[in-house]
Image (tube, rainbow, N blue to C red):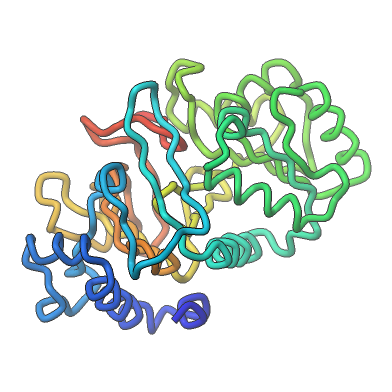
Length: 322
């Protein structure tokens, strides 16, 4: 099944998604009970828009597992002080690694061609962050001697960036938003061979800003025309990327749908509303998740994240508001 998922072609997405739904209905007791409660059993589900999407809040209170297993890892979301965090029980880390490696290659080519620099201070303070795990593995795969995490050592990071710029080395600086803004204020200098990628997240360190404001400050500080973005979450095993302007694209095994904010069972293939995610790589958890992110979906499958819906928890990589 895993090989089928990562080799999927668009024409087979719906049939594969329905196959995954039936598998998770049979092997995930909590998901099955939820599906039954809302009248979405396999007998009456014939398209992706009819599949039941599990509200993301259940990851805070329940072990969402498809099949019985001892997890190789338990990823936990970050959050505000006193909040209850989500927990994602991961059966097989190799699936996560294959997902983010193939996705990186799709958008950016071979990891070995890149110097990967991580600026994720708040996440490095925890040992159960899916984002840190991903960046750590990308750093290892890059094999570049300067690839690594730079925590709060902005001067060292600046020197590394200047050195890579001098030799024309393709470099990716991936960072949490507040840290990138702090770095930009202290060490602004033009970059020509470096991509800056923000993952969201103010973590209460700064006044909340919309994405356009964040990108404008970073572009000005580093002389860049585009700022890239990553869209992922603890509860998933796949990410979408934006190569500029906040427009995200997904890998072939991930798809975004939009639900109506007033009627969560009204699912649309385009338009504005609240984001539902299909992540087929998340086969041993739940591949169909109703998030708390407001978004806009375009006809070609690309999408924007507009903020958080009213009353949802502010957390992790999504601490951006409209």
